[in-house]
Length: 464
Figure 1 (tube, one colour):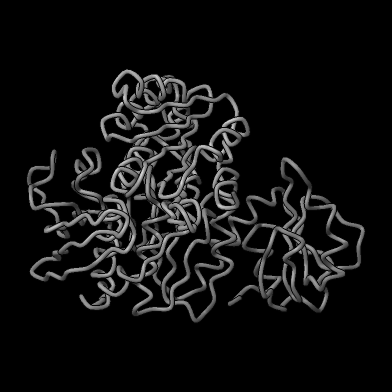
Figure 2: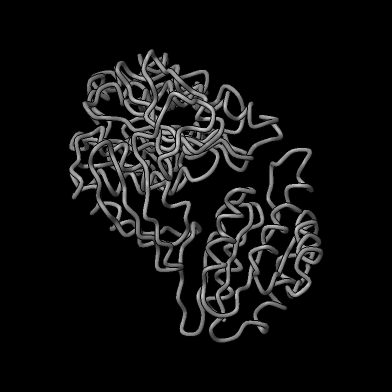
């Protein structure tokens, strides 16, 4: 890790370095918070969590070869450690310091829906030209972002960093660490409404990122989003907008989309064929994963790629090489059926998008849906609205689980009496009825918010 001597680390996180003696200028090879991941010459940051306290593993990590630890409490050991007031704050300070030592481009991604899939698409495109480090999984919060940054190495040329928030001020703290060269916002949807209250609140919280951009940064926004399209200037520069079609932005009438899609052919579960226009250039590509929302992911990736000097052929290759990841519109083909595993998380926009994907599938279409969390006072209304959408799409069977999903099921019954609706209070009760119901040729969507733990449902169907 470039520049990460114990002396520099202590100064960066405003800590007191104790017991280092002649080790002041030894470099850490990595920083972790999980004692099981310690390696020779790594630094262990002892985090106090809800389930465990990292301080109880300090002796163990030194036995495993740790160089030093970061601690919130004085230690009675003859080993080097950095004493700090808050290990969590120290983690953020160290990440910001480490990133400042590196010569690379930072792409910061946020938005209500599609952050992870957009991150994957951008990384796939940029990998055609650069050595890219990207956020793993959903390590996108105030602990996950620093851990992602600590894995960057000197050979990396671009870091694609996802940033997720649930309250005001969080983006200030995340973006102050990342300091993006390019900022991408996917959309302003309906998530974390308990804290952010409204889409206007979500817009305010997400755009905190603008106050922490590097000099001459580029801002890339979804121009088909009615709220993002109102943004006219960031750091005295016009944003770069992307979207579908050539029509002017809905509210910023003097702005146009610099990157847009046309000639879209939805091929169901086989993906989407489209033409992508960037200024005077045009290229055609085949997105190999289903869902029209992936058009926006590809356009965002093309916009970033253009800014970083990729050719049309490189962008095309990156788009066509994208693959799904577990829990996010991941297609699983068993011997007898197709599972659309989209169970990592859910909100009204992503739920509707997944239902749209299911509606293009072959065979009997079955939606296995659970509650969506963190929607605020209109949560019942939003579940009902998703149910109405499912009814309009003609999905043949619904298995729903949870208190809020009863509103979803009620809407389906009212708007499509031909849909075979099954309602359950618990996930395990539902699984017991679902498995014998399935038959050869079925296409099954599995989706709910993370707390519903619907990965258990996916695993049960696979192993049935």
